[in-house]
Image (cartoon, rainbow, N blue to C red):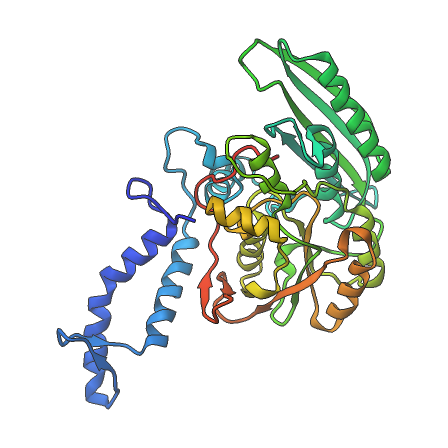
Length: 408
């Protein structure tokens, strides 16, 4: 994954540049400490160097400061990266939409807004689906739209109830394909126990859309006394993923037929409300949940670290990835941590309930391969680190660029 470009520097580039600019001043300050007996090494040019651990911490501190600067969209026009779920998406949301619409219900930036009306707690979410191709192994744009909306409500602790469906159709789109999409949505809604109760249809000129786009909104009822959000993560908590990651994104990439790669991979698109219900029944003190869609698990971990002001450490060996997905990812030069899922969730639970949470998730068909992948910690707040298979660690930043366009 790339971290930046010379003509469009990221916060990592800025932080490292700031580090270089200040290094000389720090070396001078460290040299001055000699008078008090402090010890440090010198490089071949005679410049004073701080111990390695101190220098690493300084870089992490500067990276953290750079991340906390007020977000600003540097581009003059929207690019595909703004829709990829990573750094550009986050900046666009915070600098444009959050700045314009700011209110206490929107500010948490959870998958669904949590509302209280006449004493009842509701969850409200909306999403749009522009996946290409419309039909792919394991699913299509129709069941993807239903499942994605159901999952956004579910990970907010709500029981999904009602959905809307808005269609933007391109002139010339086959009616047979539209019937197929509608039937897929009907079946997915029935499987999830929700109803599609309202909708809208628009048709645009040929060439002005890509066949069919779908917008959905969903309403759910929060019946349990739970308060779920990434800002609630605490040091010592355990991070769990409900199953193998990356299936959906790699499926979409291969389904486009642009690459001469064959693999037995299907999208994991599925409704998570049953799995979430089982988990909350057994472990009501779940701190946070997110479904790992655009930007993958890496994005969720960064959202946890930023919102809760905590550090996150995960182990590469513990993250479940199917061999086919890992192999295809290596051929494509893509890290599975950044690849989207459509039927997987990441949960943060207190350490004392982690074993029970994994046990319950593995008892559900969609959680049979659930695994603990890491922990929340107090050190290095705002930073996600991965313990690699080789024994070292590396920072897991937000996605930069757009390796998998139009995956949902």
